[in-house]
Image (tube, rainbow, N blue to C red; front, side, top):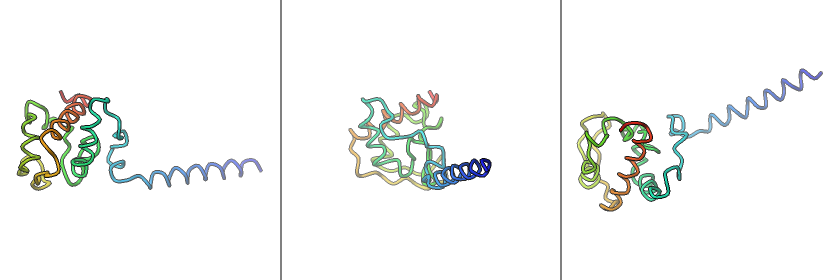
Length: 133
C-alpha cells in the first residue's frame, strides 16, 4: 500500500528532525543559532575571533549571554551607559557584579589593550545590528 510507504518516509524525516534538534549545543538552544564565526564584516573579524576566544564562554556567541555571564548585546551596555573604557577596565581589573546575578567578573589576563579595542569594536557592531543604538 502506498499510504504505508508515505507514512514510513514521514517517520524517517521526523526522526531526522528530532535527532538534529536534540544534538544542538547549549548556545543554539538559547537563540544563538545565527551567531556564527565569520558573520562580522572583514574589518571586525579579528575582534570577533578574540571575542570568541576570550569572552564567549561567559557572554555567549554573538554576545547574547549564557548562564555564566550577561549579554553584552543589551541596552545596559550601550555606549551612553557603559563607555568603551568600561570594557577596558573590566578586562584589565575585573568588575564587581552590579547589574546581574552572575557574580563578579575576573580580570582577563589573556587580552591586551589592543585586543580589547578590537573586541569592543566588534561588540559595538553587534549592538548596532541589534538596534540598541
